[in-house]
Picture 1: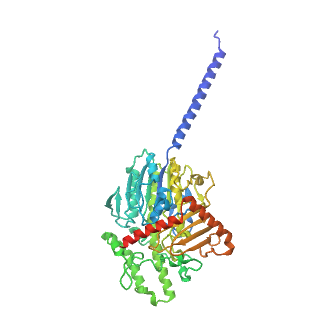
Picture 2 (picture 1 turned 60 degrees about the vertical axis):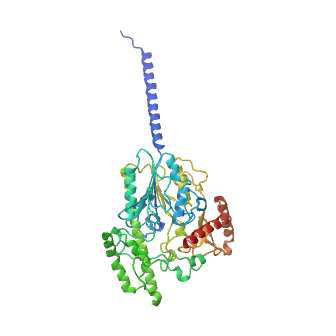
Picture 3 (picture 1 turned 135 degrees about the vertical axis):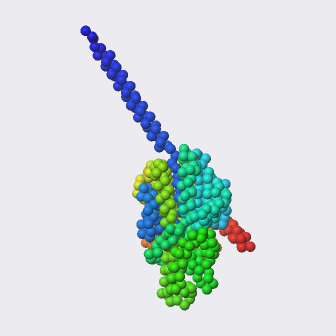
Length: 553
């Protein structure tokens, strides 16, 4: 009779149990390590910047002016920032702040006149040094060969809308077509063929549009022809001589009905001298087919205007007639502006689709912003420069599925000063101590609600085109204080809660005496924190006047 060794069987079962347990936990451990390794993969970065794209012209902001379904996708699947602002509302300085994470008076690019020093650190250089592939495609508006990029294809200066030249790694080449489409095509080409797909990338995909003079793509030349746009409530502010505001508002030269040019901006030859203000030179760039399409779209509309209003000599017109012409100008401006944005939105959709189709969307940070805000007829203006809300604020939408919940809304005072440190933070790269911005990574993920409660602003380019006075200022969530200087010495302060359109300067209102004192204290705190001073102002003024005078001579 066989003897059963129950003790041995029990021991064997116990041994198998322990072995199985070890294997299971080892498997879990391995799985965790694999997952941890995936989580540690550096994110790709797609930084999309347009030029002069007002937040009012992005449908995610709810103004109802136009539809931007592809840009809106970024907010729907990520975050919308409602109080993003710039430190200096003008093209080249804003881009220098983006790259360096430093105020204009620190990075040296205070206006469109002073040179930019590409030798200084910028965030793409730091990412490049840490294993990232870097590319810059489109508009940067900073002279010199961009540094920090493995590949660059940039427009010289402002660039052209039709058949533009690009500097491809410094070599000038002409491309036939429409600049927005070309920029998108080249960005997609680099993503698909121009990079090592084993490495993380940062692509700065920068559009020229909707910068002045707002020349639409061939397919959108007649978009909105069936629509009349109503201007903002403050469009006729000039009729009150900007009552409630100071000298700076009254003496600017950026009125749609006044400073915008018949040829360059409104795209027609008109006036006693047949003035086309150089627009004929832009049309000369068009191919025969492009010119045929252009004339077919604009000539009938231009002739209809001339039939109704003659050659635009408004001196004999009634006030009502002058208002009609002003509204015609507004509509010509806003339609062309929005037409160029339609092409930008199309391009955003193409690039987002590429990320989705190639499995890159989950691990790619997508940022959409503009170099600053823009006036779309508010106060009767176009352009930017002022610290008033429409040009001070800028659109900002960010998507990163790994960390940002879909539909997030951020109302804090984020600035373009924060882009560089934020992107370095996401990439796991140390943020240099001399960068002045802050990473908003924890803010947008919801990990932390702590954030600054005031931001600092400077503007230097005066006397110059548009004649916006030099000024600096501080803004909190509710109040704004500005000092206009050089050939005037005026302060303005606004309560954004009771006066969101900034129509009444309350600087000398006794009811706001305590607020005024507090805002002056905050202003001095930030000037000290960031290293600004009256001596800085004089230094940059002297340098600016020296360059301007040299050019005149």
